[in-house]
Length: 351
Image 1 (cartoon, rainbow, N blue to C red):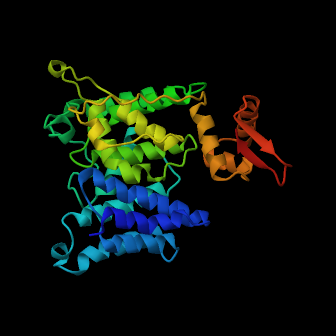
Image 2 (cartoon, rainbow, N blue to C red):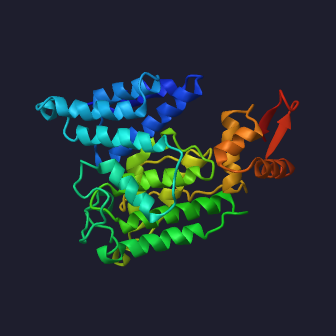
Image 3 (cartoon, rainbow, N blue to C red):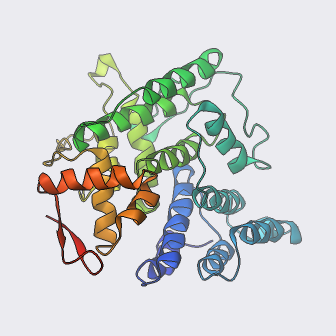
């Protein structure tokens, strides 16, 4: 089994390199592997070596999947040699890496179900199937209590309602702070439905990452890789209330996670902070800027590459060049960004 610190160090060196292709692949793998921690699963050394081959361009993602599948078919005693559950961690991680490397995404219930099916086919017999019974889960963060999930009889209706509400919601002129509060609530609502028997958090994470990319955000950073267990605990706290103990649904933990994910904030994402017995008062996430969500996406892109052209920003955000030019002109008028130098050799500066 590969220890978390070790695999993270092995992959992070690619992120520090100047080659964008290798860096993006490494970020995807970090997210894919880190998400296994939500269920206490750890990757094998073989998966890390396979990930490195893919990052370096020796194999494509399809070959990486085949290598992992074959690895667990060859030796009958493999499970005795590997840490318990490393097979699930390896297979799901490479599948997450595959999905995150794809451009296509449909924002609907079928896409959520399809992601679950692709992640857990051959691992869970109920992969891609809506659960047909109710259940509870004891949570450490709640001292053994449980979140109340949606009744199995209303799962599809609840998902349809939440996603349709989000489709009809406008982020136009909404501040980054208010946008993140909304995204946190939407994410927690999807998770609270808990449509599947297992794998709900990882499925929700992949679905939300793909959705946020439609705003132009590149979500493949180490926030998920290093804080996936905090992500799950924050989802639990966002959906738990106990009137007798004066505990109410609290999305502030999840908001901090998304602030770190989408902007320059660096909140401490400690699991102990999310425990219902933790007494220290934590600062409520507040953004001092008035950027919209789409403006923040452009800021992130510019910070990553000051020489980038508007045509490239349009491709990354999925918007027209005309829209990007209009938005960036407005951002210059607001004093958010500035253009230094000529059209060919100039660069963008975040003020």
